[in-house]
Image (tube, rainbow, N blue to C red; front, side, top):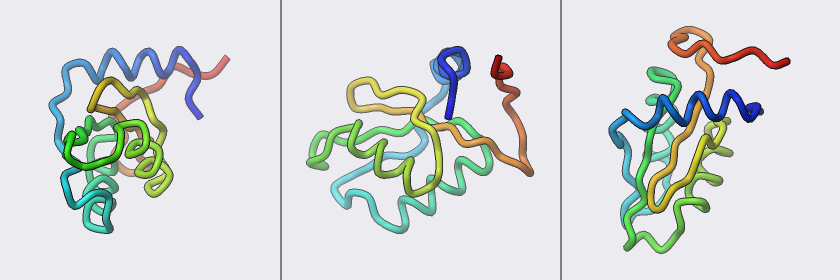
Length: 99
């Protein structure tokens, strides 16, 4: 679970990120979950987008995907959302310590 300061730090880092995964008309399936899992392992912080035609909101998609890959939801804005999961082997982000 992220603290407010950690979440704020990750939000600011996510501003410059490109959207690398899109949830399309196929919705959330095993292939998408696998793709998100691999991306989080490699990058720790990723930005995703939900197409309007998908039939689910970005919040719903973020909640379902985050639960499937054991990630934290950093933010949801419009059709985009950002997920974070600390990587043990490929550490890239040093979070502010909990106080």
